[in-house]
Image 1: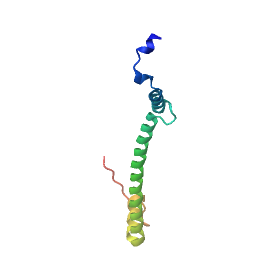
Image 2 (image 1 turned 90 degrees about the vertical axis):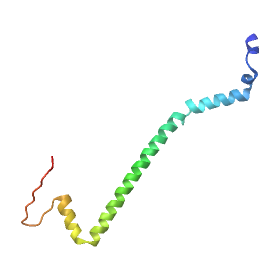
Image 3 (image 1 turned 180 degrees about the vertical axis):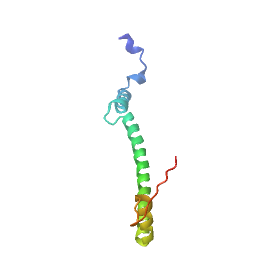
Image 4 (image 1 turned 120 degrees about the vertical axis):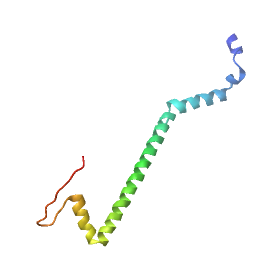
Length: 98
């Protein structure tokens, strides 16, 4: 057992060895390891960006809806511009930019 004499005493400490094994287990082998946590953090940031985008879209649609309720002329404007609706006897010409 000569090789045990060459090992430093701090490596023989059972508490330090237990802590090292536990740390390695948590970082690499656990169900919620370090790599999975990094992936989840990235996914959370993407979802928060999506939430911000959709919140802005909802607010702009609500603003448009309030405008439609307040002004009937805006209803006709949106119907003509977005949905290409027309009055009886009108002709619509659509010009596309290339």
